[in-house]
Amino acid sequence: HCHSRHATVLACAHRPIPALHYMIAIAGSDEVPLAPYATFGSEELAAAAVTAMGTGRACLLANHGQLGAGDTLAQALRVAAEMEELAAIYWGSLAIGGPQVLSAQQMEAVRAKFAGYGQQGQFPAATVE
Image (cartoon, rainbow, N blue to C red; front, top):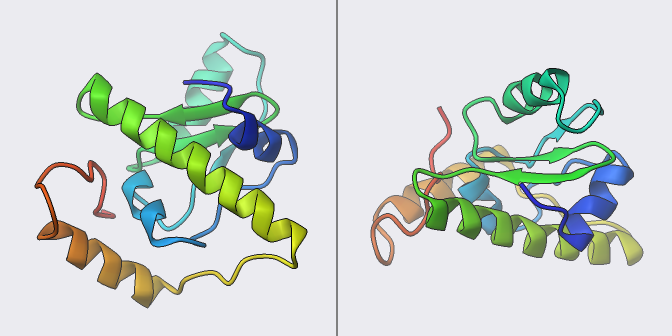
C-alpha cells in the first residue's frame, strides 16, 4: 500500500473512484472502492480492505491511502501507479464539473479488449468475477 497524493486526497474525502477512464479495469472492478476508516496497522483495517477489494486488485483506505495488489510485486506496483493516475484524473474532473462515467457495458467491452490486446499479462486484473 502507499500514500500517493491524489489517491490519499480522495480517500480522505471518502470518494471511491468511478469508471471515468477505461484503465480502471486493471483494478479488477468498475470502480476503485473505499474501505471504511480503521486505525492503521489494525486487524480491523486489514479486514475492511479485504472486504472492499473483494475480488478486485485495488481500494482506497479511508483517511489513509491506497492499496494495490497483483500476482507479483511488479503487478502490484503497476496497479498502485495506475490508481494514482486515475485518482489525479478524477480529482481534476471534479474541478470542472465531474466525470462522465463509463457504463457497465462499456467496461465489459474494455475487459474483452484487454484479454487479447498488447502484451499478455500486462493488465493484471482485467476481468471481474
